[in-house]
Length: 126
Image (cartoon, rainbow, N blue to C red; front, top):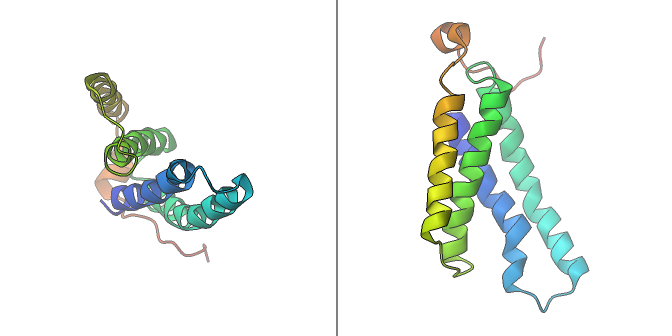
């Protein structure tokens, strides 16, 4: 659950870094690039621990599948609320197909990790 919460938080920052500037087209490109980099720093600070904590419970491909589904989900909410662009039925249908992909991608959870392993620590190995 921590992995998923960190991925959601990370994707909120990522979405603002990549698309938040679309409401501020009057700003120079260098300024929005700088602002985007500053917003992206917390995104990385959340994404890396999410992957570190989740790996072992999820395989690397499963982490990526989850990340993409979360990314698009966060983006559609962002689109409708922040950018005030309509989210249409076909966008939601596409998201539904992505969730089907998540279901398929998570079907073969690593048995040993899912049954016995606790999430790995964020500290360096001794």
